[in-house]
Length: 323
Image (cartoon, one colour):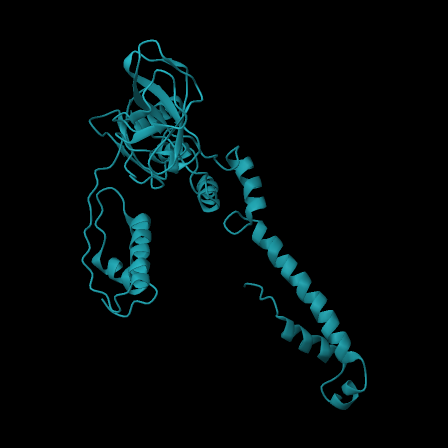
């Protein structure tokens, strides 16, 4: 049976009844018992609240940030995953032998900046390694993005362009709830030396991977396919470079035998046509957010998202009256 913590009003009534019998209401008005009942009840209420707080810290599903970080160090051996820098290459053109020093800054049209990662000597059109100045997903840029030198470089064109592979690998710092989910997973799933759950756990350990699924015997006995998603990126379906990095990480964790594949799911877009009542900007935004949350919660490999669940999500959006 759960223990119900009494509120302040209930405590005052309880203490008042202990001090003076209910039949002595007149005597209560002529004594300091009313003051004592309120003072003692306030202290008792504070103690109950402190005990309630301690109880919440005892398990990672409800504990606060400081306690969760202690659980994470214990169960995962780490705290928050730090944000990572996007990296890639750009094409520069200039005079043969002109140097582009490491640390040279270039700027994209959205004012985000990249920095040259290594000293490079230009020889016509030359590929130069670059890194985002600011860590996080904002540093990921599409291939073909034009860059402009912040300060002129002698013998080198001020204009450059990011190569077709784009700048990838920028991941935002892990959020509190993402860390909580990682900690809870260590309690729910016991390592079994290479089970399907183990592959998913290992994949989720890699920065940027938010969801993972395992399929055994993917192309025959002894083969394992791990599908991954990066919901924090503008394009949540990871490219080849990112999948190769995850493969390298998993390859160090898994059994020596067997054949491993790291793949991105094939997207199946859902095109919505919704007539809302009332049809306003805030209601549309609420519906978009509700559908996005539903898809993140229920979408998986090869599943069908029930129409009733989608209707329920739309109906639950703030301000929606009918659709």
